[in-house]
Length: 521
Image (tube, rainbow, N blue to C red):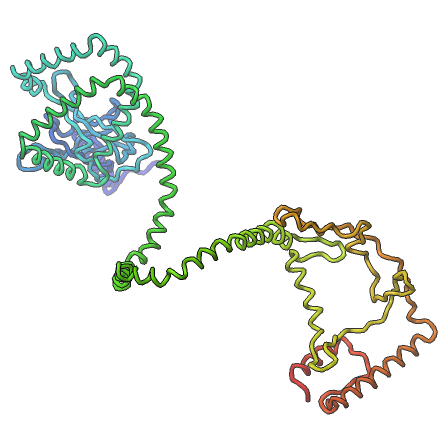
């Protein structure tokens, strides 16, 4: 069985119902959601006409918000700041948004704010931000339009229409029709230029207007000169009319000129970074040129005196005996210069390319060009030196056992430690190429050192273990050691050096190196 509600429970439910009823009543009178947090933006207008708070804000005819409040700007009351609440369905609003006050019915009345949210590529408008006055507009009232049509204005309008009719009749109209296909790109570029005149910063347009006012004041200071300017413009226009055929031909050539100019500007744009770097690097030189010129002025003054008539007469007198000899030297130097030219051409076209060529050998791979490989022969000549005695030079060499014998063809043999891989360069049957001293070196064929390796001669493997070979080697080593010992005594070096009768092992090389670096003991 269900228990009856107590008095405390009934009181709580009554309070809850009262609160809910009060909220519903308030929402009904306010006609909005008090818990809603609308998106607010502002717009500055020069004139809002009869726009009222709670007037709708529309995008493409769809209500997306309402006017919250209107605040006057300035003491004259010509401007107004309009605060608008935007619903979520009207977001986002972009930085280049525009706002216009428009009438909802013809001949004015019931105004609303027509909002253009801007281009999607522009950044989003921050909440609380203000649309600038150059992006807002208000409708012209019908009374304001009628006030503009005074008698003198109507007469001027008739004159304009009459002259415009004369201009478009006949050849003028046909010319205007031909120009229609060019108007789209022209107006598009004009729109870009007009948009650029607004500037990027806040006061760019106002600064431009201030500068234009100064120009207008300058023109107004001399009315006669301004009249002459207008007269001269008329004369110039008449000259253009006379030369309209040539002007048309020049205009036809203008696209080609523009294309060439664009290519030239592109080339200049590419060259500008290098020019900037050169200018930065050249700046210290320019700054130092002043002191350099000041230091050079005394020298210039002395040189000016040196080339004065008095000095030149004495110089010419001193050089007079030398001039014939210089002329004879110049004439005789022609042959020397020609030979020098031939030598330089031979060196540049024949000798240098040969030295810079790389000659490969499969058995002895080249590690560089000819001029580097040729220098390696001096390493072998490092063992040859002068003894400064009557015996002349002596050569140190390393004697090894002959493991291979090659027959030379005249009852002699050539012994080598390793087998001969081949013969290079091979013997030519027709001998060396002929010497042609009558042909200039610069026109001769470049020498080619590439050859085909000839097969090695017949080689015989020497048996080092033949009967008696070990005894003969031991006897030769003994005699060599005795000779070296006598040579040390003869040169009085027996106390500084000693001779070992055992072969040097690979593990002993570091110790010998340290001993040689330390010097004789």
